[in-house]
Length: 77
Length: 404
Image (spheres, rainbow over the protein chains, first blue to last red):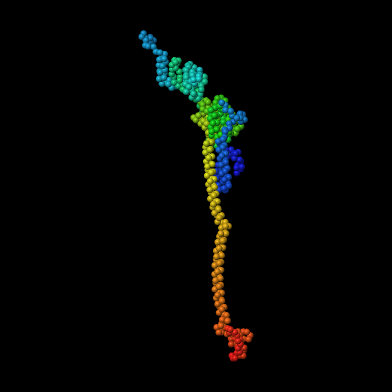
């Protein structure tokens, strides 16, 4: 699968979570070699870590539309 | 005309008079609970928070007061000149000797007309199919960018940003600031929706404002706003007013939330839920890897034992056994064979001994041969006068045949 070639750190939460789901499903379903199982497991763990890091470390980015430009939002108070 | 009595009763104090009037008014059924219609004048709201105003019509005026606790709850703050209906009771302000309306609520008199307009527009847009369920687009479960159309200074924006920060901080928020009440609100909201779609292409748009009177929310019952929501490329979630407020915008929106906070919740997954799901996926994969390794180990054991059965060593062991067996059989056979041969040999030796002529001669027999060396076996080989050689056990001698 091509997606596996993208470094995990560059995946969005959605991509990483989808891959994690996929890996758990294939671990559950398919006959596979030990190498495959171990590789998938390791990647799954890394994906889960990445997702958790994204969730826990994220700072909400707030922009303001002025005309067609996106500017940083200054709370008006 | 009644003349003052020559023997007057004791005079009332002013306080007594006013209190008497107050009791009189407050015991009146009609004056205890009434709506009064009129135009506001002399409106004032001093720092005490109480509201003072006068209700007028063409011919008369009525002083009114509204205490702070009621005034604070007013969704609509009247201004001089507004036509309103005020609800309350009539009583006496004893210190001033004035009766007045103690109002507990005020509503603008145009409300009925606004409601008619609301119903008319709702029926029209509904007939056009703008509210059809089939038009409603799904809200993407993993938004990357959320557009917000609201006032940049309102509590609604603060509530929504707090909610988004708490639930799903991965998202990027783009705010299109717009007035959300007053004359300029509809145009601002329409432009905000249009600009967000064009310049920010959000996954979903929140259109929101906090609670207010029906006038305050009126921009959300605007036909142009309704059509802008319908035309939005991104699905729109409305969160206007309080739970009980329904606006035309709510009907057109892809999803209606009861409040701005609820709109932000409906637009995002919840981080706490996601962390639980992540943890479950982690646990599951650990279980699976253990099961997978266990399975592989079992297969490995099975293969290893099969391999042992098939190994050359096993062959060698088995061949060696066969070799041992063969050699044992060979040795057995050989010794048996030798014994047999020996027995044959013994028998043959005995026979040979039996056949030895010397042995026969020793028993007294003689061996007769002619001069040519042939053994004589028959009388026919002999005639009178022949010379024969006779051999006995210890030597030989010659004889002449005398007769035959």
